[in-house]
Image (cartoon, rainbow over all chains, first blue to last red; front, side, top):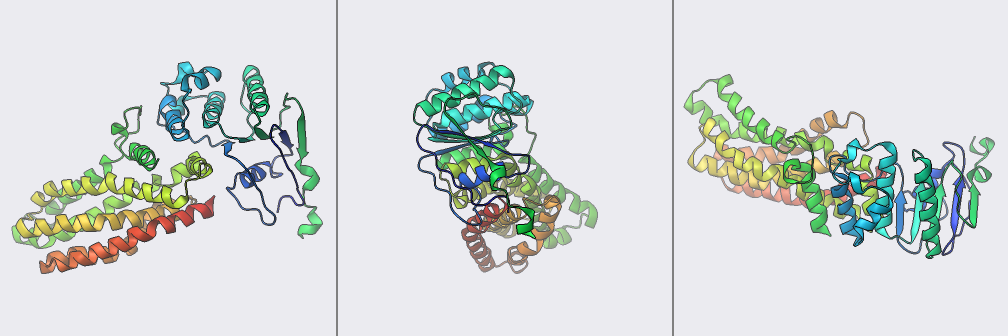
Length: 182
Length: 221
């Protein structure tokens, strides 16, 4: 068990920054909210489509960036492919196989996939790690815009986020004390 | 949407047909080459006696097909778990059963029909002619979907294991025994009825596999 008595409700337009040490359960919380793992007790409810960005970006390493993204764009019915690629400064990289991308470029590719999905709820697991300063600012901007449009974002990150009306959830407050586990 | 998933899965197994793929090697060709290589080596090992070859050749084709079916297993499921591909599909409301059914179909297309085509040169090397060749071909047609189904279940079950690739080969062999017994048995008795059994076993496995494999990948998530 990682944490307990954790209760959180986010409404349209809200951003929540989840903080906590390595291994404290940020990724587990996000996977639980995405419905990919079941909570031991309690429940997670999401109303609306959910977009997930974590270290597994879901793009085939053997494919070109454009080809890999097009698979998801087609599935999600994304029509503004060019705009999304421009926004994340990936236009020049469309013909490069995903396995040749650098860490930061891969992260931006994941963000492009997320942006194309047009999901109501964004669950971002360490979206800023590996990104340069300009790209970090871009993430802040994308999140701000997403929430201004009525979207919800829950972001686990060790870096500071520059987003208006940011709520914070410190997972440490809900960690199970060791004596309970023994 | 199913068509898109199938197209993408097939591009994984046929890298050269995927168009956009930069490099991936001869993934799908490997089982077929392996299959023909076994058929080619066999006459060298037992001698070129026509009667011996004609009597035992059918069984060799079946063993070669079984072993060729093992080759693609290591990247059948584990890779897409690593990539987060299944997670992303799940978020879009695709169930694990659908993902696995599509994957099974793609897996079969990538090795079943190529193997049946490769059975012609293999049969020539093993002196299989006329009714025997006919039985091998319809036997493979009936049996390879079952092999694909077993392969998928095993690949899904072993996806989270480090030694999954080696283990999946060991696991497939006993599970594939019924298909082998009836498929190769049809040749010994020159009896089409056994092929019916092979088809029935395959059908049962194909119906079961998406649920078993789906449950397996849900469990490792």
